[in-house]
Amino acid sequence: MNDHLIGIQISKFRKVAGITQEELGEAVGISGQAVSRWECGGAPDVTLLPAIADKLGVTIDALFGRDGSERVAVEDVIGGWLCSFPKKERMDRLCRLIWSSVKYLLDDGLGIPDMGYLETCKPDMGDGLNRLMLSQLSTPGGILLDIHAEDLSFVTLWPEPKAGYAAWLAPKDEYRRLFELLSRQGCLELLEYLHCRKQSYFVAKVAAKQLEMPCKEVEELLNALEERQILRSMELELESGEEKAYELAEPVAFIPFLYIARCFMQNGMNYICAGNYDTPLLQKEKWREQYNSQNTVQTGTNYIYYGNYDNSYLTDDVLAIGDKTAEGEDGADKHKNE
Image (cartoon, rainbow, N blue to C red):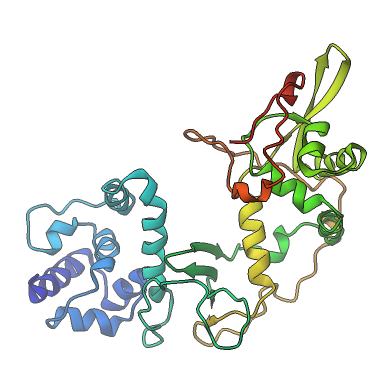
């Protein structure tokens, strides 16, 4: 790669666009001095090229001195790159791309070591504690929570809303009711079981049989989960009469919820505060009384059912009790774990 040519091209297109070095640097997350170094013979990191081309209104090819100077859609560039991988790998590749770009969220000169992806998310720190290698980043624009390792990786980005984080929190009493429900005997086990089976309706006695719990206790939990809108229900008409059947309303949120809860319960291994940023996340705001309504709990309205989705996130080991399937029951009772 001709580093000097790229610098010359950046300088040319920047001047044509009437953009200063500082403005270009700000657009791609670096300093004006760094842009100056490119134009004096250096070259930007290759991951910055889409953002540079987009700001200058040219193609990436144009930065290399090739023909073409029309505006490039960065989304299309990244989309084309993702499509070069098998579908099963694309989520992981996107997660890696985001992690590799984290350093551009920091002020110039506050770079973090290029750690790449770790071999394991649970390194032996010599203290015998069962901790995950968690990374947390706090910047004036928002927060990031991340684990980047070959055996476990995820990244969550939380840009700060204009109204602040506090404006979008549920009332405190809603959280209290949720956590009280999750702490009840058998509730987490019930949710775990439901995420080990295909997404379909079921009746209480099927879950009770799998969990080896009294049916009445399971029904109480199911009704409480429905009240929290974690489940939804319908009435089935059977020969024996009407019976209530349930289904998960949010089959995706449970795993991220448990992961983030675990992260919350441990000391962060890598906490990065970008720049002189000491503003509290909630900006000293309270959870406002006007949100304190009984109707604030909701079911997500944009759930996309994609591909052959069987909802089996968790290992079947949890169902060691579990070759006891519900074969032979009426209606929604007919279900085998797969």
